[in-house]
Image 1 (cartoon, rainbow, N blue to C red):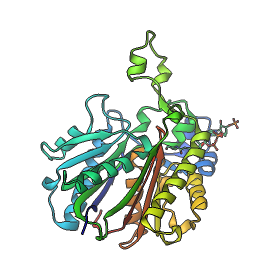
Image 2: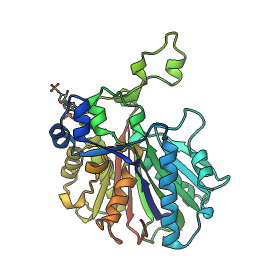
Image 3: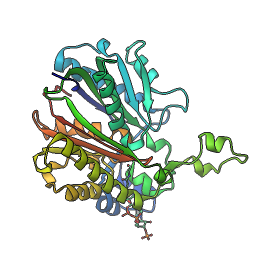
Length: 339
Ligand code: UT7
């Protein structure tokens, strides 16, 4: 019997304020029709002034810990590791995870951030899973949380149409590979030659060591949409196929593909590359937009709550984001208590 990390809790949190396409169109040169047809998004949630990534991470973490307690009876106090995927930490230094762990009452457990933008959750899941299989951790809280509304250019109609804020979380426990919920494998990759396609130019050591002060606009997030679209389809399809080959699941035998929710046209294109039917593809981006590191766990939570994701389903997770980075994970969906 081989030791594995087993998913046993799932949670999520969204800020209270939802912004519809119509509300955006009242302030920017865009339209509900353009956003819906080009991206599939109807609304996104945004944080209130003063609300930070850690606030959403704590709410999602508490939700996942409550779900894990209802699922296997173990208390939050048994968690011995927190990994937080985020590219919008509360501050550049220190990491946000120790504060989140502290506020969740997890005392002095190891806690650190993982930065892989929209692939962050899959990277964090692989990190925590590996620490469990190596015997370093028995029970881990893995959170994906981002507040991209805080780094968007208020005048950039493209990024403001797409991105939303949120957090999603899972609890992993030590178990066995044959159990439902066991993480069966990962495929991870990066290509730093595409670092400029998705970026915030200012704020890091490169700009801080420069002789001249940066332009104010260099502090905003920028994305070169078209090449990112192409790379997202290519790398999520390749990574998914590589992992499915390793796990031995033909695409037709996967029940649900939960891909990073960036654009409905990307989800359909990945589906086409893998030969999937629409019913295999989970989509919640119409309600939340692209929530970056929160995207995959929030899509899992919505699909579980909607009854779309059922115990015994073969589930493939796949993400793509800045870096460039990408990654996939496979598991059989367990019996979980959420909500
Ligand atoms: O999460 C990490 C990974 N991110 C992604 O995967 C995002 C990938 N990229 C995309 O999803 C798409 O490229 C976008 C949604 C960002 C843009 O859609 P597109 O169909 O690729 O549009 P485009 O950038 O080629 O622009 C087409 C036109 C342009 O106008 P012109 O130059 O043809 O006159 C844009 O200025 O659409 C215009 N446009 C808009 N029009 C109305 C761009 N954004 C908007 C908007 N409203 N919000």
